[in-house]
Image (cartoon, rainbow, N blue to C red; front, side, top):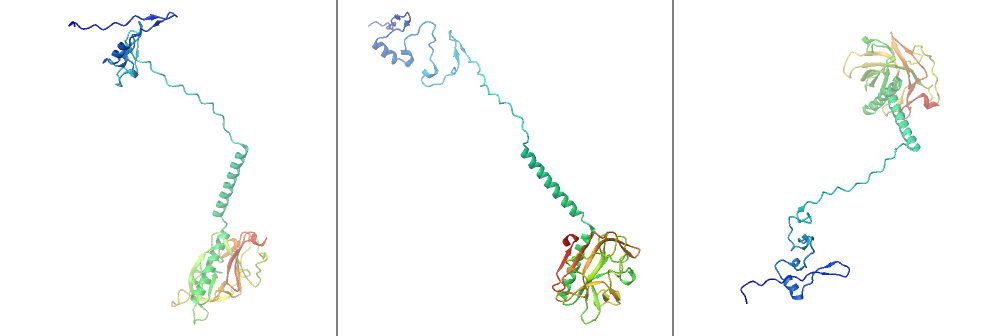
Amino acid sequence: MSSAKAKTASPPPPTTSATGKMKPAAYSPAEALRRRESPQGAWASRPPSTPGRDVSPQPSQTSGTTRRHEGRLRLKNGAPRRSAPTSPPLRASAPPREMSAFSLVELLVVIAIIGMMVGLSALAVSGMRAPAVQHAADQVMSGLSLARQIAITKNTQAALLIANQTNTNNGFPANGPYRHWSIVYSNKGSSGNWTIAKDWEELPTGAVFGELLGSGYNPLNVNPYALNPGGTISSSQISGNTTFTIFRDTSSTPAVITSTALPSIRFASDGSASGSAWAIRLMPGSAMSGNATITGNNTYYFVETDTRTGRIRMRSPESYK
């Protein structure tokens, strides 16, 4: 053998097909096996390309190694270039929004809700601005309930008094009659002596005691009032039905009020109403210069007690209609 390296056999020249196209050259089986086993890899066994064809290995034909020029394009002369940036896909334009509006049903529902809210607000405001007469009736109901509770607790008589005169030196309030009330209870063992449980309290401005009723009162009837607006309340409407001698407490002397007939509603020790009166009419009015004057007779409230059970309740003019 010669020391000179054996030259690699040159591939056979390409042949031309019947259609005139160039066919790749074919290797003999031995040459093809030798090329497949050569260090260049499987791609080296491919037949030579035609002139002008890029024969550089593609990323998918390499032995698995990611090459830096992956993703690049090559020109025909072999110079790499970067691929042109791809534009983002066009987003479909949203359809134009339709103009929204209230339907007739929705509009009616909104109007109904607003009407209900206005009505509730009006009720709340009217309750906050209730007439002074109604507040006075609530106050007198509380006073009668207190008198009845004291009578049961102390096992004695108790009474709600109405101030029918003005005299600060004799234990009465200073600013007008028929506008103040007080609670007293009877001292056991001392006939006619009473002790103050609650001092004089004034009715709300604009309300007066209009009438004290007993046997002539019928809770089922309207019970018309005798005075017209501008009339002055007197003992004809509220008369003193019990004589009282009142002390500040059970041991103090002298008496605050001595042997004075005062309008009152009394309770026995069992809580039942006793005495000759069991209903009070509260009217709109004012008290000045020692007199109480009626300013209206259409708005009034009755506060009554049950003669048997002592139950206390309030009636308005609407309850008789």
